[in-house]
Image 1 (cartoon, rainbow, N blue to C red):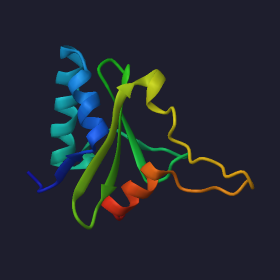
Image 2 (image 1 turned 45 degrees about the horizontal axis):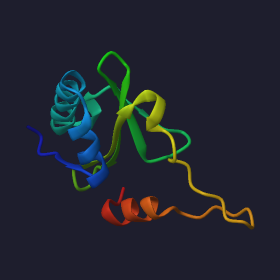
Image 3 (image 1 turned 120 degrees about the horizontal axis):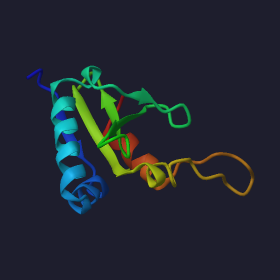
Length: 115
């Protein structure tokens, strides 16, 4: 083990518990692989949400979204959902004046993990 710590956000914990047995087992295996080192997991950084990474699992039907802190050797898993739902609500909201503002979830994640 390389000493990477894994943390699931409260919403990711709920999503994990709600998975059926097959996808839950596949998610567990993926999480174990992340604990060995996130560079060992085939994943891509989301272009629309820099700093967030996506890994596929269970016949490519599910996605696990996470953030990496290399200095702390820490992985924060934020979403575990079916592909059709995983990206909904991830983009930052636009203020009425057209300027982007951070969502509460983005602020929370930024405070919890520093890249």
